[in-house]
Length: 408
Image (cartoon, rainbow, N blue to C red; front, side, top):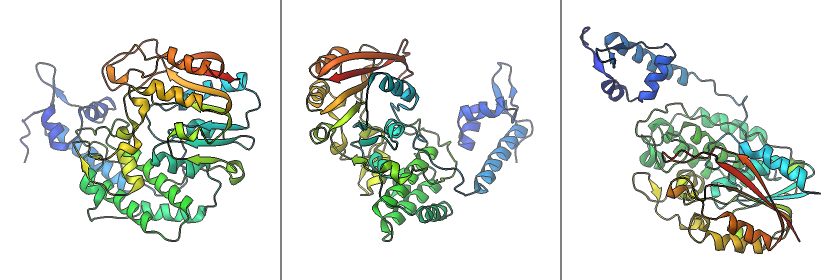
């Protein structure tokens, strides 16, 4: 029994309830708890405030357990966190294309990432070619851009069943990622759902891609990370239960004729042609194979041995990009030289001389312009943009640029 006169420091509370300092401050700001202050002005916690915290944690658990499992809210392609996402830049990109480019009936996004840019150009009058080296992203493209048949009712039913699964046994995911990237409960459920999808024999390849994509997006929402998987947050403070949603997919006739790839962009451009090719290469040394190793692991489901604190797959060589290395300028020049398109649109930021070393751009403006100049006439457009950096560097006057080349 707690002594009513005893007060406890904040560190004791954080350790006892396995919560973060920010969570406590958020509750205090919302008026949910009212800690006392000692003679120094520091927060202290007595039996009354500890009871308030316990009631809050109990209330959150009940709310999570009683969460309505339904598919009324559909999953959108941009409903995930991703380094370098161009979601906020789409109006800028579309404005430049609309003003500067004519008769665009085919749009190719060959470093597509989440696919949000390609998704904006995917309509009844424009066919898209979409590609990424990560298999997890490729599955998302099959989900949203393929014109293969899928049974909506079947997908909805299966996702409802997945949401209502109760899993008590450990599996590959809970053993390797439980208690770090995810709660044990969520990790067990992720592993059980992914194993169930893999064992299904009555679903098409697109239906399988849709189910895996729904799982990957659900994982991202409950992951104990700051938006990528290079590391997890030390204190497991993300306790929301795993919840899958049915993707909102455009009509089949809109996707008709789209082309989807999962390969090296430098090899792909030798086999395709497009009215416009949009290029958004990695900018710096941050390998996406490292940042999204966990999603890639679940997508492929080969259950490889993982290593290190971050629990990464040992062999990630096939999904590493040369654009994150000193080879980037030469690889970029090779890419541009092999493109068959009326227009080339390159997105690149101005961090070449800014930021910490790991965040510095690998290709200079001069190198971009020199490569594009060999293909045709160049225009450059600028917009302000907030960029991710994991360090403490403050970036001012940061801009995202679009280099537009009208090919000869």
